[in-house]
Image 1 (cartoon, rainbow, N blue to C red):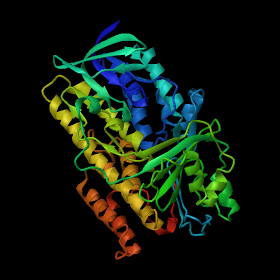
Image 2: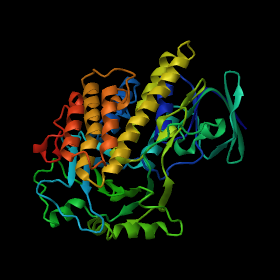
Image 3: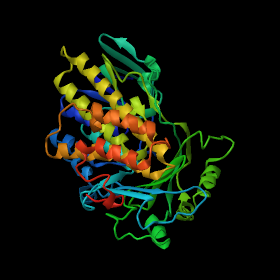
Image 4: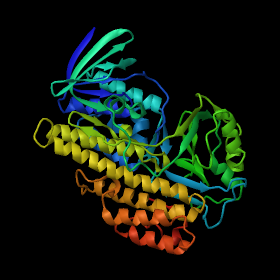
Length: 489
């Protein structure tokens, strides 16, 4: 029989819950970490961004986590933690395909987009092999004295004073935890939503996609196939495979994230209207069917071998009506999920972790706690709506790639501006991720999404409006025609 009391119980020991537990220890809050599974385990959500790395670096410095700090860039990660598998991510690479036709490079690079995120490998972002990354963070939490219970099933939480009593079993042994606050980091497990009856947000989400994915060995490098088809990489700001590589086409896109151990994460994110899920078709058969319509990508995967069981989902999106209550809070990766496009998920979750830790430092058990919790939810809902517009609009633009490129500049301009503000120590604490609460930027984004598929709006006019709208955030020359869709640091 295990019987514990703590300030906070964290549900879910993925990267977010384990990292949060470490931070709670640093600010003097007692916590218990509980997970229904165990490590190591397969997971996606594997791509970092400059903003994600900046937040991770700030958290490690501010809360004295010297073993975590090296994970904020590829160079220090490889030097300090070579035992944790990762991959090199120099930027974001996009290549547009027409279904049923081979890919043909163009001299004007009109069917590609490369956006660099680092000057070189040393300061680059990373792909996280989540089985390694998550286990490392969970082990760090245990090493710091956080009580951790894996393979644990929990019953519905019962109110206990101003907090909660949670009862469950770990491999047959009874477990009881009394805590003042529940933090739900369970992702799609949705512990709080299930047990407290938190339903979907009334505004819903415009993004609609489902996924088919695995991990592979023997995936060819896209640059080799690109050059073999006559493409020139002389103007590319970085090797296009050292990135989050996106193959986009009408109705969906594919991600390709290579790790340094020869394993590649790859999968399709598909519009279910154009690619409806047929459960009578095996995942392998569906994979082969889609590749048959993408000849160049099929060649890239001609020798590929899936090494983990296929995952085939229904619609992936979720947005819960609330992410906070007086004595419970969800991390962003639990309260909402959109789509892996543009790699926003991990950065948004780290924003939420940073926010919550600051709240627990400064406001917990004080009169302004409820207001702070409401502010947390308000910001997350605004950020979810903003990102939903970008992702859903991008799906609409996959058919006409020039428009999709233009719409993506809302993300890249806001991201690079936010990164610079943080680096230069001008970022306002508590501001919205990617300036999602900026009314003019959001208004222009709403208009652009409404027009992206409208043939009455000329493409040149569509692009010009976006160039003007992102002007106050555009520090890196985005939407500049002379750059030919190739953006260096």
